[in-house]
Length: 99
Image 1 (cartoon, rainbow, N blue to C red):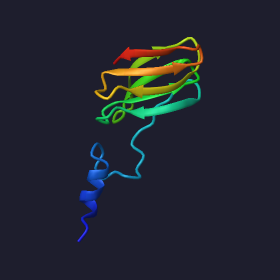
Image 2 (cartoon, helix red, strand yellow):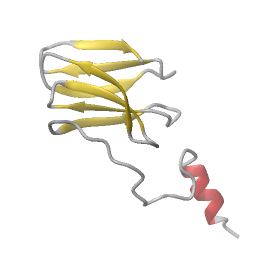
Image 3 (spheres, one colour):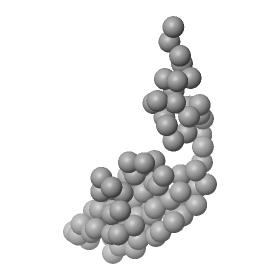
């Protein structure tokens, strides 16, 4: 017999048993262009038109770091080990941040 709870926990090990439930919200001062989780699920990064990338605690919704840019931020990506964040912005620069 298929154990749905075990399957759900396997699919979502960070938030077991909460699939389909809104956990939190994070907010920028402008539209959000991109979102990514660190591989562990312990942090979330967002890219925004407000000229910032931000790193969040996805459980509490609290901002951990604000990374200023000189233009809109279009993309964010964590390194495989989660120690760095790459950002791409409208100012024609890609940056790598230690987070």
